[in-house]
Image (cartoon, rainbow, N blue to C red; front, side, top):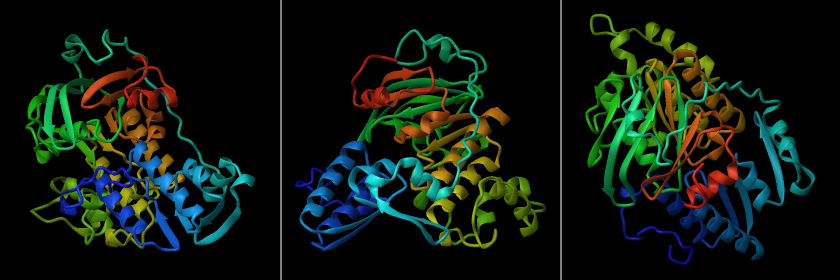
Length: 391
């Protein structure tokens, strides 16, 4: 770990590690094997940019020493950065194989999924920017009709902290939160969703104060939640697709304390179709699905209750290009059509295209806010690293 500059305690139980740290352990185990052929399947899915660059440097060293590397990824910029050849599979068939120097990103995307229909995104009328780059003023935070009001959230825990973070999300507004790993963006989203309790501060949805760390109460209040780690928090693998999708609305489906399979599937089927979920049927255990389809089940569950606020943490991690567009489109439409608000916490900067505003956290504090989409990627990257002026 020290040799590769990965900040993970080698004596810590893996069960106590974060998603990123567990990914690092898997990568380190593979690199330490001394193999002549290394298979890497979406290795950067949970890594911050610094860790990605350290991994890429190690991959280059291994390649120069004669190690063959098969790199599986949906992040095309990574393929162009470290690979010499590209092979594209679609529906179980090899549809393209060529040297990287001879293909473009558009060539790969077309080979992967055909033509992608990008969802139309219409941003609501711009509101006046807050007077301070540290986001909403006290007057704005108490404005009537605010869908979400977060006030003075503080948390001091190993690996991440928050220091008096305040923000608002208005009805129908889509707000992104981003930053490097450990910036507090993911932690803040979990606090808003009721999945974690802060040391101090309050979260209100409309006029209702939410009980800290009470996910069930947040659900009843109207907060849908797409967690960061779908394997641990997103679904129950032994239950079927329909059971997982309708898990949060059993109270609405039950009659005399019972839920019929037909009634459950009738509610799950439209969401499965909207998300183009591929399965052997709505009764198939979710643990048997691909990672991308498991993520679609997780998103469908969050949308099933018609939430007032959707809290999504890296919702497109580990999914292909077409599924990424589809998931972002559904989240965008949920806000546009149903008037739901969206709080999107992600370090995938491409996901922020659907947002009306983007808040950047650095070391547990709000560093700046971007209010005029489309957002400049280079300025976003600089802001996450604590550089650049307020947007």
